[in-house]
Length: 108
Length: 113
Image (tube, rainbow over all chains, first blue to last red):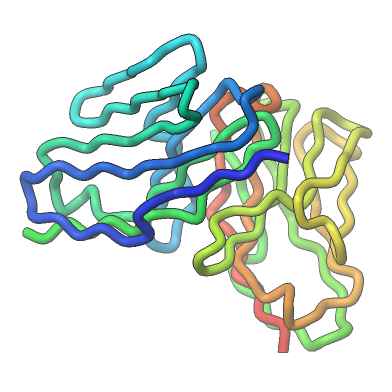
């Protein structure tokens, strides 16, 4: 089955700085790579996703890049704000394996 | 739309007790799944269903049973609870399997003593 590794496990940045979270996967057949944000006491919520026929996707301050050859993808958050503080999970299809999560703290 | 709902929000069980975690969705999604979330381990798939009457095992199915008699409901049963099943459980649903956005419920925090 798929194996997804996520780094770092914790990340602290100053408000306004950028944050980058990286994931690697093992199954070359995976073709869908979502990122979920989980706020305290809530279920995860999709923030952005990318499919294997695309190398980069951007939505306002959030972007995801995918390198299929190297089997890794990354989440980039620019101009971070305190409300970006949460746990972020990457995942890879086809059997929806999730990374272990990254706790992002944005300090005002 | 209520989205994905889960009950109860919190539950404490003694070792050996049984219980059912309820999950319902009102989005007419075919695909539903159960995950458990443990510190440092992310979300691990327990069981999933691609439609009414069809269920399959995920990554960590032992100790859990599921059934899918309707499109809306996907209950998770613990037949004989063990301390290792202490976790937060999330139900999710989506239009399709594997390559669609999953909508998660608010979770059930289960403690087994």
